[in-house]
Image (cartoon, rainbow over all chains, first blue to last red; front, top):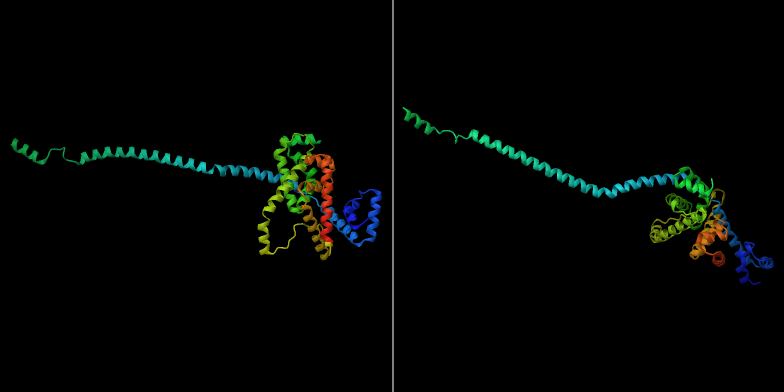
Length: 145
Length: 189
């Protein structure tokens, strides 16, 4: 067995999945070849890293975190909906304010017309045009005499 | 509680049943994600996302496959999407690290306190080399290899998760091993 052939079978040798005869050939080659031995060591090291990684466990509070996250997200959905509706609510508020303003304005105009009427009364009261003027009074008085 | 009872209970909004599901599958999902991401925090984030998705879409699960198969499928998809997004940001990150000069590795070693600093450094180099090689595998080979090596799933189960035939999975894992061997050995020697 040459180095090329051996290197192609190293991973299967390491996994012990070669046939018995092949296992023996690779084993014998490795015993004599430093390069192939070092390649095998490298493979072993790499697969050890995977084994170490596999021993890691998930956070024991994962379930609590997930449930908390779900609750937060549902709260955020409500807030998000409010945020999405914000422009529409603002427009609605603007329309309501404008309508209210117009209504109040109309109310003010009606009051003004009332005031106008009373002004006329006041004007009549103050004005003496409709009353008998003094010249006419004198004339009447002199004619009576 | 059987799998079907568990699913029915979660569908009815039983939070205790959902907690049971998480505690039953959290390590498996975490390990699969870790196999793709090689970072504890990222793997935990993905595991959380997987269970959140399960909570919201368990009513869509038609029980045609095992619950674990469905969970693995979600975990694989989420991990691959995460990697895709991470790759997009890698250019920005590399610019960032150029200025900040951060040497923080993307992987961790459990219980480093008992190791010599040189040993830790060598381990990190080896781990980085291994992860680079695994990440360079074609997508399907990587999925099949990760499920097989990190989760010790049988070829039949991998075939169910990936929606492939048994022989297809056998071939994928064989090619993945050959590629890994070629790259790991030629990288070092």
